[in-house]
Image 1 (cartoon, rainbow, N blue to C red):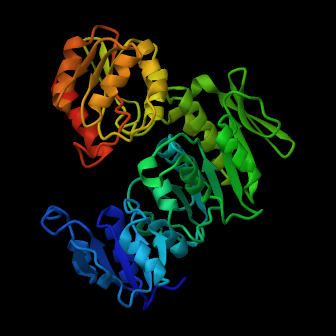
Image 2 (cartoon, rainbow, N blue to C red):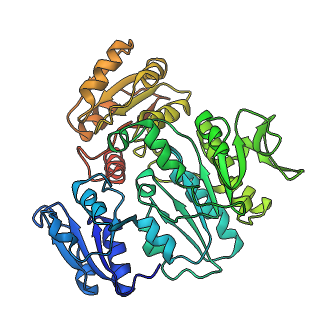
Image 3 (cartoon, rainbow, N blue to C red):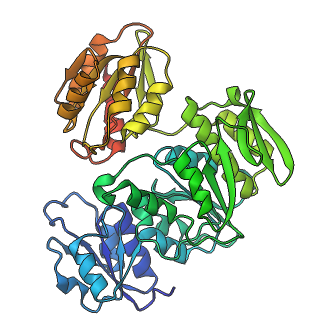
Length: 451
């Protein structure tokens, strides 16, 4: 796909939109970057790169006039393909694509792509560390870090790209074809965007839609929805399982990680030697090993990486211990399923801080586990009222509501006793009070250190 000379409209002036606009402009396209927010509301945004490379900036009202003479539209992950402007564009036969589609078109190196509801960032980062042992030029990006289109710009044929891919990014994919893909799990999420679980699953399945028999897909055997995808994929299927012994794939047996492929059996390492905390992270490690195996990483390099990798920021991240109480930052838990995995990782009594922007997902399993494992539940944000009602209905005691994260941390500090855990695991998005889950996590850590 040639971008030179094309008139392209990029929608969404976030990190991804700004990056891809500059990349396309530098490739010879005539780019307009548009955002529905006004210049006043975006006054703290740094548009210096946009101005330097000559991209036209159009903020505020997004009328049909933006589509005049436009060849293609590139949508940032935060922009739904169901917005009115895109619907109009489709009636005019204007091609609509995601930022990762642009990245794919620019990239000559093989791509390893990871998606799923939970565990994407940890697994992607772990794979990146494993692949770096091959001495190839490795780029890790996508839904983490910088925009993938910016990251792959300049990566040669001999490089390799490891990409975390969200359902939002897959929404506008066209030809995107990873050499190795992985789907970690599927639970209800982002239904406000995708409208139904079926649509959400369909978006995830786009990660393998363009694969061929020469490519590989790593699937979670323990997740029935993901397991059944094997019937649809055009590529070679490789399962991972924490619960079942597999005839072919990677699994846990008698405390050991074992990999079987094409009649050969490899003993990887004991599960007990993995640094990552929690059963869900065992699954992430299995998936990472599967992807890395097909990327040419040696077993020794996999094991060495597993033994030293301690996780990513904002995912069950140990902050510090104060008076025998350990504080954990799990701000990346933006849905109940992710918070459930965090709760399952601890044996000690927990003081849980939860709440934020409500995704209106079912809370039954989450609250049942809270009743079992949580000593005090501290709720904040837009979701606190619904969460409080659900907690009460499930017999949860010691429920507290607060108006700020600062108040929540102070209260948790007052309530916590020796050998207990204070856990920020919101089960909600952050946008009611913070710009991102990263900002929420960083502020939580600052507040804890201030104690």
